[in-house]
View 1 (cartoon, helix red, strand yellow):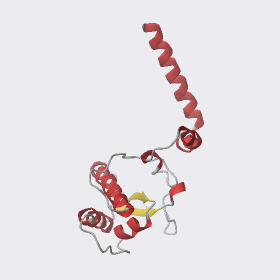
View 2: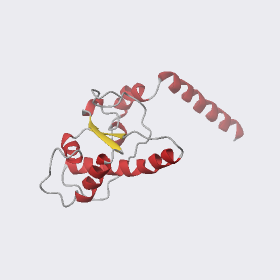
View 3: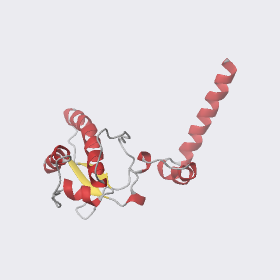
View 4: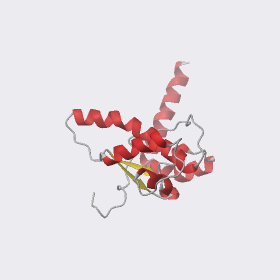
Length: 156
């Protein structure tokens, strides 16, 4: 990746975590920091495993669509009321400084990480599905499902 590039080239997600944050968040930035923290914590074991197998890891990209959360993690913004966020953003800042992660911003509509975490109507799923799944692979997947249904119907 060149230094001019602001974010990684489009690629499939290795891990997407969709879970309810157990704590009550007081702002969108705090919720984004919590989400970054949850995802980063999930990525650490994979990084360690790959490094132990001899595959040196570059900083793992973490994508956010909240510029305030990005500023807090990259130390370009110092939040005033941080008690609730302290542990999370200090941990993320520490990992960023150790070059284990590289957090970057991408606006909402082009942020593919946002899609699985939001509730959308079925029309939206139909529109964006080609971005996430190759139409040829989708056709093969549908055929496999149809074959399994036909096979299961014969057994019963």
